Structure formats: structure tokens, C-alpha cells
Image (cartoon, rainbow, N blue to C red):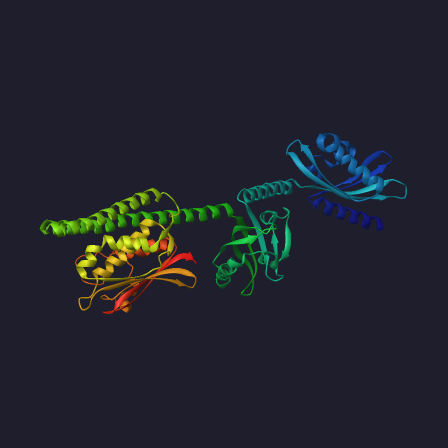
Length: 498
């Protein structure tokens, strides 16, 4: 009865082991002799051997199934386990008649038995599918890392619960550190953000935290180990929540320093082109406006010259000579201006302010005489400014012409020129007692192109526009103070300290 129970239990365990998809077998080493004393039925599927074939000739596994490249490693592993009586765990490849190449994993434990033989209790698993998935995963990771490296991108993984962040080696490389993965406090990254970029970066971050569906994207500068800054593009997405609170976000960081520097360089180029266009526009207006003044004066004198007597003609010839000289100077300056239009910076010279004003007054002598304008000059004889000659001539000509043009019929016209030092900078004030301008109404449009503020048949609205642009092109500024029917003062501040 007891024997029957024992056989029943053995049969139960055998059936149970045969159901296991892995090979379960027991081998015994007696000296150098190796034998298999038990083997589960799964050996048929895994090794494509019957249990009897495996037990009768276990060398079939080593010399006919295991591929030659893996054979010595397999034997060494088993010998080491037998000698030291330690667990073994080894992966190897076999070639099967039907399935071909397969990956196997053998694990087990050796035991020293009472008769000094060593028993191996072993399990063999077919891990081909697992190895294929590992290979695919490895290939995927290699492709992923290659793509990130090629794009100069690194990965970050933010843990908001622990206030730590994982950074891939590429992120560390961007910072000029060793190319290896790290997990560091959030402060490690935030302390490196450029002070000027902190506010905008926080705004970008807040957009995502206020609306979880909005991906995070921000461009800012980070400090490297050498204290220099790099421009980076950081993008990411919240991926885990605790209730309504985000607890994890992942993303990438890309080094865009070269792209940003090209963008800045392009912006500077556009500014230079814009400046050049303004200068060319100024030049065109100077040609039109200044030469028109000379031509108008010449025409007026010629008309008067026809009806004048000999004495008057002699006096007029002197003024015509002054106008001719002024025209020659203007043309010379315009020629010089053409030559410097290809330069980025406007060429300056040390000019005597009083001398240039005198030239303008000589050019406008007939207009000044015709309108009976009183001129008052309060400029020191040695007062100079570093300026472009054509610009200075144009500025003085425009302001003086306007003062005469918009003089009041109710009083004798007066123009004064005052040189002052204001907060250490040279300044010229040009004041008239003419019609004045309603600044409350026209202040914002005062220096606009084609803007006129009085009904005058010769008003074209470009004089003040030209003048303001020329003054600012030289690094200065202009202010205006005016009262209707009392007069106007233009204050020209030069970009020159005393």
C-alpha cells in the first residue's frame, strides 16, 4: 500500500514537471563521468531530442546542439560551478534541426552528495524571443541616442515630488561637463539660467502647468562650467499626475547656440540695412530739399537782376557769388555723402558751428532781407561739433528756412541761435517768434513725413522729418517747445560731451 502511494506521488511530480515549458533535468557528475538521471518531456520541444536520447547520450547537447563559438564558455561555466559548488546561470546558442538558431539559458545548483558525486538540478529555458526583444530594444536605444546626439539634444526627466531631475549625458555635455547620466536637484539647472531669461522661462513653464495639454517650450541661456552661456531650446510634456497635480514631466534640451547666433547676426544685418536705407533716403531728401533752396534763390535773383539798374546789379552779383559758392559747397558735400553711403558709420569732422551757420545765412541772404528777419547769433567763435558736414548744413538750412517761412505778419521776424552746455553735452537752440505750433494737437506727428501744420503754398512736410532723422543718425536728439502765435524753439543735442 505504501509502495503504491510512493509511486503515485512520483507519477504526480513527473506529470507536473512535464507540463513546465522549460527543461527540468537532474545530472550527476561522478569524477569526469557525466550522466542524466531525469529529464522532463519538454526536452523534445526545446532541444528537439527525446528524453531517452538526452539521457543515453548527453554529449549530443554539447557537441551537436551548442554552436562551436559558445561551446567552450558553456563547459567552463559548468566546470567552475562543479568545482566551487556555486549556482550557475549561463546563456548560449544552439542549432536545432527544425528551428535553427535559438538562444538558451541554463540555471541550476550543484550539490555534493553522500557518495561524493555531484548532482546538478537544472532548468533550461528557450529565451530566443527575449533576446530578440533585447536586440530590438538595443537597436532602438542606439538609434534614439544617435538621433539625440546628431541633433545635439539631451533628455530630462523631472520628478516634482522629490524635486530632482534626471539629465542624460548629452545635457551634461551641453553644460561642458562629463558625458554621463545624473540625477540632481532641480536647483542644479535653475541656478544656471541666465538672469535676463528667468522671467520668460518661468512664463513658458507656467503656461504648461496652468494647462496640462499645452506642451512646454522655452528658449533661454544656460551657464556652462567655463562661465560662458549657451542658447538652448527646452521642450517637454507633463506625463504623470497625482489627482490634479502634476508630479512628473519629461522632455529634451537642444543646443541652438549656432542657430541663435545666426539669428542675432541676421538681425544686426537687417538693422544695418535699415540704417543704410534711412541714410540713402536722407541723401535723396537732402538732394531734393537743399538744391531746391539754392535753385529757388538763384531764380529769384535772376528775375530781380533783369529789372535792376547797374548799381543794384553790382550788389546783386556779390550775393549771386555767395549763392554760387554755397551751391558749390552743397554739391561737394553731397558728393562726399554719396561716397560714404557704403560705409556703416557716418563720417564726422570737427566743424566750426558759427562758420557753418554763417554759410547758411549767406545762402538765405535774399530771403532774410526780403522778410526783414533779425538774426541774433550767440555762438562762441571757437564752438565746434564733431559732425558730418552735409548733415550739419542740411539741419541748419531746414530750421532756418522753416523759421523764415512760418514767420508772423504781426511782428518783425527774429531768429536767435544759442550755444549751450546742457548736462555736459553740447546743444544748439534755434528760436523764432513766428506762428508757433499747437503741440497739444500735433506733438506726436510733428516730425512725421509729409506732415504740415500751416497753410503755406511751399509746405511739403519733409523738412522736420529729414532733420530729425539726420540728428538721430549722428547719435543726437531734438526737442521742440512751441506756443501758437508766440514762436518756437528747437533744441538740438549733439552726441558729444565737453
